[in-house]
Image (cartoon, rainbow, N blue to C red; front, top):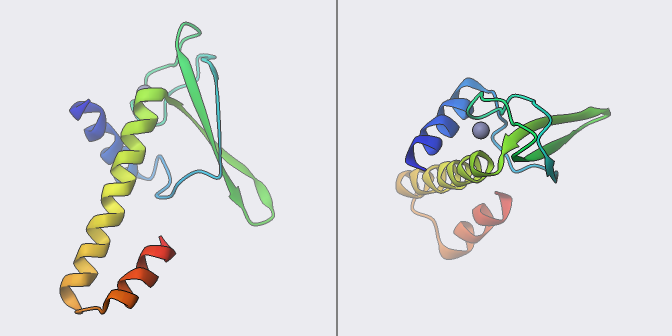
Length: 106
Ligand SMILES: [Zn+2]
């Protein structure tokens, strides 16, 4: 699982997967598409998750992921968010209400 998190972080850094939570998530049997995180094909014997991102006026952006890869990616996403928040908290002392506003934005 640690290795998957590593893959997920690399995929995020390389821009192969977006840095935000998907707007829609679908599950189903794999169809041989490459996983956006680990780059391995998702066989029909496995379950895949298809995540979709709405874009202004453009077709949905979609990515295929193994279930484990998807959860590793989401874990990395949530950790990246909390790291960003603790950085900004360190540089500017925020009152509880400001912290709350920051949390609502993410
Ligand atoms: Zn994968």
